[in-house]
Image 1 (spheres, rainbow, N blue to C red):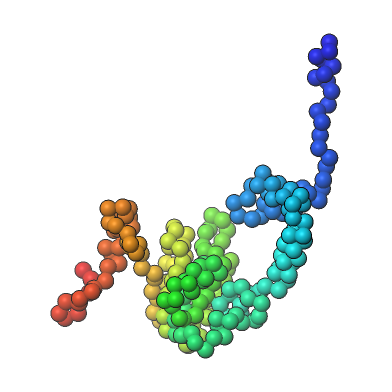
Image 2 (image 1 turned 60 degrees about the horizontal axis):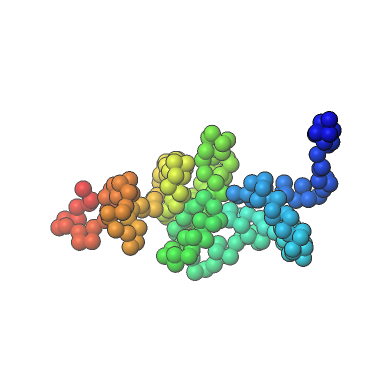
Length: 221
């Protein structure tokens, strides 16, 4: 009888905290953050770092209000035209097309490119409802056909969606008389052939280049 009475007692419940739950739900918008991780982050901020939580909230609000898309290259900026597009030290005849602002930063860190950019803010993915309009291809076409650009370098990722995006853009731009190139793929710097996967090695063979051109200037065969 005592056991039945004990089982009948309602289980203790935590006090509902609507603002805490709302914070955890908001944190779940971050990539790779699930419900448990979001809850841990929310509890940590409120338990250990309330000043940091307020600073984070204010920084997010300022960024969401101040950051916009560059009118020329579509990357993030706080001005109508970003610093790269305003720079007189860049080569305006080259336009490198990347998927995200993070990709732009990665290319810049190589110090091997001094042209300008266009950021798609995504890639074609029909299954996800992302078509030419969503990645602003109309703006890219206007930018690439401004009479100054001579070469468009396609630097989308080497995923199936990135490849499809590069192929689609290449056809659009080639039809307008522009020179279009694609990032080369192959063996990484410092890589040993024994440990390179077959697909990468096959692509490296296809994209090989001459180090001593044969007489008559014959191309790769």
